[in-house]
Length: 397
Image 1 (cartoon, rainbow, N blue to C red):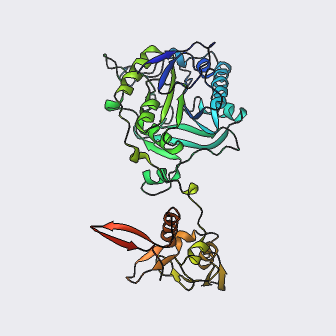
Image 2: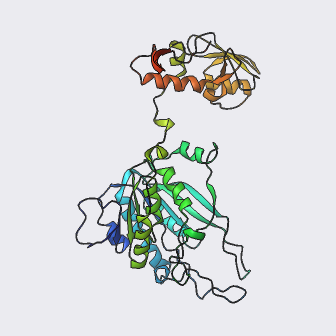
Image 3: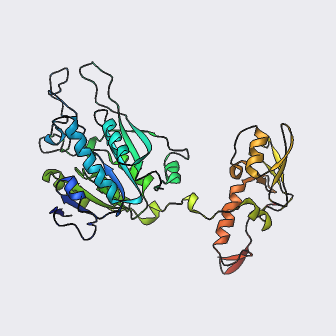
């Protein structure tokens, strides 16, 4: 892994993928082409405004953030830097690209104001709850146990990548919430110098970047980190089969990042092959009815067999609701029998087979999608030993 010094007067002709660009982040960002990257992840200076060193009750000094890169003359100077790098980041993002930026209470509200003024559209604010936060040694405030990430689209019209199913799978088949409980970067992952001090005071845990990158990018996507530090964004991007561009001005951080990146092995392709439901072909329920997968007259029930409905020839359902007979779509009838405003009929309604096993309608929809990719809907074959066995699609009834 080698890094590249950038001359701001000579724009790059192509993206320097999987490279660390040495220099000022605003100047280097200005060399990248318009609308060329998928995601920008930024961990900018926090502007902690520390007036004096921080000590523990035993008078030992806390190894905190006191580097020159986190010192600004005033809020105006900090806001100017923020507007400059955020403006360049928005320029290089593709129309459907998105931005992640992380900060503490010292800076995240100022960053949020600037990015909204520049035209970004906030999608979520995510709270990173630290399982092992640094105590408040002076006992004058609450322990600061979280940081905030802002996830924003390039514009209100943008449709950025969101791998909903991947996040749900990562969270034991439950919707991923906007509060993420993850530990600080400690142990073997924390980079330390020969004297035991931290190489970088705000090194982020790889688990945090793993979630960010898996949520908002597809394999092969290009991620730019304007404040690359010791390279956590690049490490996780490489591991997940994404491309990265890191920007960093500190030679020490660059050396550590290069060392880390040299030891990373990308994961096998199947490990990050994602199925995106909203991009799959739309299969109306009527398609299942007319093709005989769920024929007219099929009796449906919910998973607990409390409610029942009959499939009609036009793809509607007929059932008995609280106010009498109700006829409508699988969703509206599912909502009506439960007395609810809405219902996902694909997962609510089931077909019971001869063995008494219940199959959600979504099972039949998945089979229809699989069949749609084959040359014929009528019949497929698979090899079983030395024989060819005919296999009919799953059907109700």
